[in-house]
View: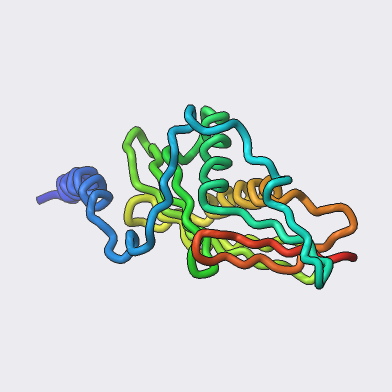
Length: 188
């Protein structure tokens, strides 16, 4: 068998095995409950940040509490307003100090499951630090260039969700657990 024949056979095998591999379930991934995502047309437009802000009377800190449902609504609206969005049918879950975003993406004319795992921290200056732990398209890890794009999009969405900073306040912490993300700001 010639080298060209071997390459052709290998190419055909790869072409047909990628969709098959993408349909294989990933065990343990669906262990957390998935929040119910309403039809975007049935949702009320926009999420009001004012409804999420509270001030702790004892510490004077400002606390923003965002739920999975609110994040899902924001993400769905963002994707619906962007015809070139990379992710379709996004679902956000908040568990174990991580944001997990799942959805579908179309690459090279084929639809694949997508999964993005994110951790958020705060640096010494009170700025959010986005750590993209994983970006999977089907069963494969996405290249670094995709991770960088995702990191920028997540930072933009995070800043939109919590504001780029409340006047005279410095971000102190981000806590993610059991379906909520709590962002705490302290007075400068």
